[in-house]
Length: 289
Image 1 (cartoon, rainbow, N blue to C red):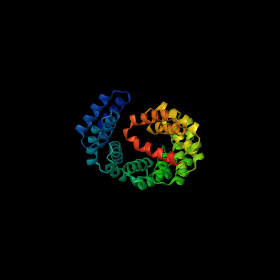
Image 2 (image 1 turned 180 degrees about the vertical axis):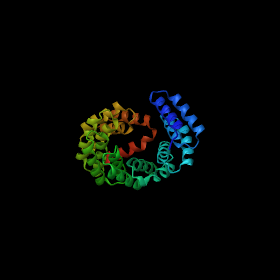
Image 3 (image 1 turned 135 degrees about the vertical axis):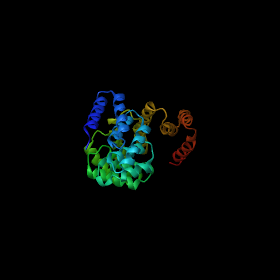
Image 4 (image 1 turned 60 degrees about the vertical axis):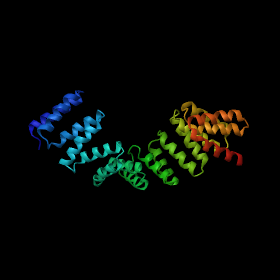
């Protein structure tokens, strides 16, 4: 049980922080830690302030001390896991999150899934994201994260199932439609893919990559004029999209306009000198097609 002195200091520090007097708040927390070095709550709350200030190294030092004092403290474990996740120390993040799994908090499973994802452990990530949805079907980004993992695993039909479920809950989430289009595209269901990516564009018209994907799908459907329009819009939004320049070059090559084709190919090479291999491969396909 907290003494009256500690409780009063803690309340004062919190009030200072809430009113924007951050330095005053931090001074009280530092004094609490100095006078009561085993008082873990002061370490946690001061670490939270450091995180808000973007000083994660200072926050981590405090949390490591708190971890030594209370190695099973849930808040300490979670905050350390988050810091390790953000700093790309995924093995450490996994260690901290795994210590909390028995609590079945959706956010712990989700963050653990992210750590596995970034390590390339897609099956483990898939399992964690599915646990998230079982615990909380409305958890933010869970459907799109699971959809992305299933696409990486080549499980396109299952990805479509989860993405469609996600769309029912978040009908204005363009990322879900983007991933849905990728799934249909990989299955060769081009019309469904195009409908999905066009919906994504309607929801997020300034995302260049969506226009590029729509152009590529249109190209596969043989809709040359539409594809050209999509690629042109893509490079208007983002002049670094090499594939859009290459595809526009191919369209002009197909029409027999070699001069215009070369302009687009040269621009692609200017952006990425290594694009020559891709250009040559696509020209071979065009010639053989």
